[in-house]
Length: 361
Image (tube, rainbow, N blue to C red; front, side, top):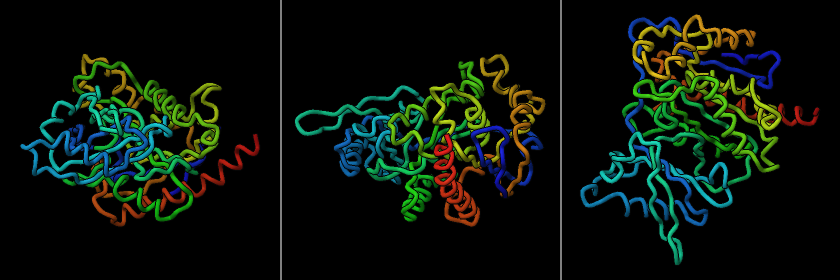
């Protein structure tokens, strides 16, 4: 594994981790699917509410008599990425989906519910799509030194794609957040970013460029305060997410200039930077509006070739797992510790790199 230099870009360091067999050389049929969701995101939580308050009201509202045996296996509560002085965002993982939340599965339209707050009720929203930015810090801190953003891949889910298979563990929330907090400095805001790249029954015409623009707008909007705009940004991306992040780093207007200047590192997990064999995927989406997206991921893609030409070299740290599992860890094994070490390196170096970069402007 080694750090990469990208010529002529704000992105200084690019690191790739891949499985032993490269993505473009996969044999046989590829299958891509959305993980079964038992985790929900709750947004617009009043800043005055504690985590205990939120979990108590979630249990009262959604765990009915028929769901008494259902347990909460994991959770987080952090200030909203945008309105951090007013609202919080929670994630809640159940061991089974409560019957009252079945209709939320797969829907991008949040369901409102109310939490008592003093003499009135605060309206919050719950859903499972995880589109956009989701904070995963489990504290009330709003003063950070670095933004660390995880970008999911093709047909991925911003929470489920990082969750260990057959486990309730989501390593970013359940391992990495605590490991970073234990180091004390630098202080890192951890976020995931999700976008709709479903393969089947997808009516969207969005492609790589549109996904990259969406990421850029979301990150810009989450860094509007003056003390946030020169905060370093590091990305960890899986599959298509790496391409989205790279395209984002090469685009933008003057409005986005500080975000691009602050972007300094990208860790790639199985990113098909030279394309992938997409014949089976093309059959799956034939006749759908997202055909263009799959075509742009092919071995002869001009889009990916231009992107690849912007890099000097690509090095890999092999993991003997399938493509989906590159983004999953069920415990703190050696692979997790290796990746965590690289994340720590990127975070530490980014503070010095970006400070120097903005001082030179």
